[in-house]
Image 1 (cartoon, rainbow, N blue to C red):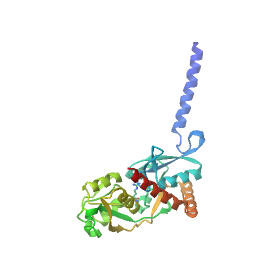
Image 2: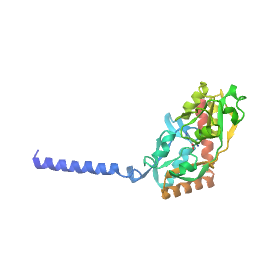
Image 3: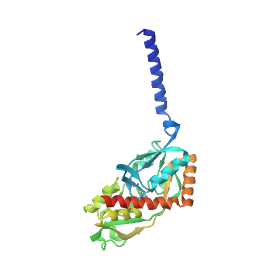
Image 4: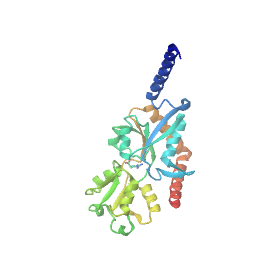
Length: 270
Ligand code: ARG
């Protein structure tokens, strides 16, 4: 091959590599195949019926009503949805860092969090419940009964705050994954587990050795909301529009029923 031709090939290849790197470094929200925008949602898929793993057509898939909501937001934006599974306590850092575009993970918009991210309107409300072993149900009737118990909650969650500040539990067990906390409860490493009530209700369906105690905590934050990067008004406006559309049409209620059914079915298959 002639030297000149080789040089030319090299130059073309170089331009190719450079173009590729420029595209690869570009804003992730703007580049995707077919020029469709990509919308990345961060969530912790250990929270049935909000978000959880299920076998769909023989494939491990992340499902739940939060996922449905995310899909609808992406649809309204004309974007492709990408789900990024993370630890719950990593989500609030990942958003300002630009690793994700929004959080939909059963998150409560508390004032501390609202300093770091912007929250949408409320899309769902639930109280907080306390799971215990069936044989312990009579032992835990009111908040004070939990003071000397081993109480668990998800790390970085509202329930972790409740455990520390309301229950005033000594040495609470804070783990990243709610499913592991359920195992800790079943094996007796902890005596009680605080979660959102729909999650507790789902957990007792799949674990007949567990029950919901009489103890409940009112949610102080008004419910669950979507988080976006501070100042991302454009996305926030769209999220609120989608939430309103789904509420008005009754679709959101349908998603919640479907997610509960899917989670229950998953349990029966086990
Ligand atoms: N609602 C609680 C909070 O905002 C817990 C949410 C946990 N979500 C999850 N996907 N594990 O802290």
